[in-house]
Length: 378
Image 1 (tube, rainbow, N blue to C red):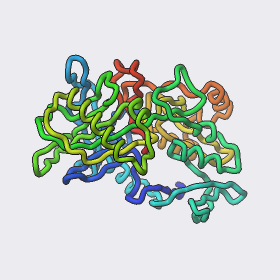
Image 2 (image 1 turned 135 degrees about the horizontal axis):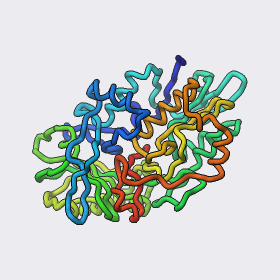
Image 3 (image 1 turned 120 degrees about the horizontal axis):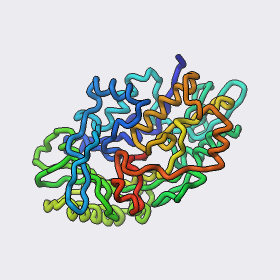
């Protein structure tokens, strides 16, 4: 095997979309809420996580539409009652064998005969060099990072992006990402289901009850819900995510709580526990290849927008497995084919399937401009 080094910008640990925090003693997921085990390439990983109780089934998931709550026939999964969805990256960090460095922002990369050199925001070189670089994220930061490379790679075209409320039909020459607001609330009242995708609502696309999902009781008996907005609402109210103005917090949380109460029939008072803008959230389009493997330049790209079947946590895991196999020479033939890649670059990205994964609206509401069910990197 090869020695692997993982650099994560977060101070608290690895995570990305599978991020959680404890509020009122309960693990609260504030990005990805649940996932389906829809990718065979990732099933070995998920089976091992299940055996170690890092993940578990989520009961009573469905859709809120004109006829009220309708249970889904699909199986959904989430993290565990100890760490929430963060149990997934925590399990991977423990079992992957990589040396992990947190609070490390790779700002530029440079290639020479010795390999790839990585530099932080201050221009200091991160101890290396490295024989191969994999970029496992997207958005403007990934696009800016690949542009610092002194070699033109297959990753350049795959990482170009823009932020839109709806995917360009029938396709686009670059990755298109949505922005979503996430509001966490505590409220009293009976909880009939664990999570519900909201059909054809301009503000709210998903409501997920953390206390029910993880079987945790809060001291005062309230339930803790995570509300996820539609991309159209997120785009219309977008602001600096690291310094969100209080008036935006108030406007966004009020609108999303009102939509939650109207669609679920909840009458209890709500306390806002957390508000965030998930800037680079759900990929709205994708390319039909499991990963990008540029063997000539020793650089790869993996992520859920590179996998057929729609964005989501399972697709992200499958892309990572494909990336490892491609580096080891075990598979991903399309990713290894420059002729195919050139043809794809000319054709562009295609609109991602809807109604498949973690956050978003059911297929019946796709006409409202909603994405496939995924919770992208924050």
